[in-house]
Image 1: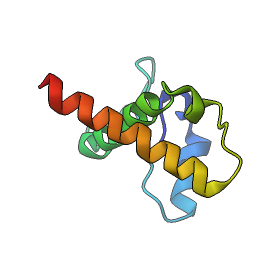
Image 2: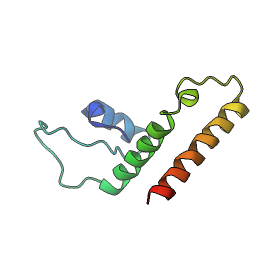
Image 3: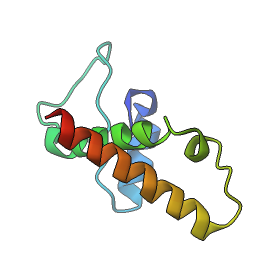
Length: 91
């Protein structure tokens, strides 16, 4: 999956040669657009990017201040729990 910046025949062909289905939206200036585009898969990608963006609002996650993998995973878990608590209490 990729964004419109990766919209090229070479990128699509490289994905197909590896056995993957390219989920890359076509640019608005594209000359020939196919009629089918897997929007559900692309929406899932957008959700993941939004979650990573929310996590990176926490300075220790964005700058990766923790040196060990275990400590970094703990900080990410704490940040994710803060995000979850905030989303539950504002709903």
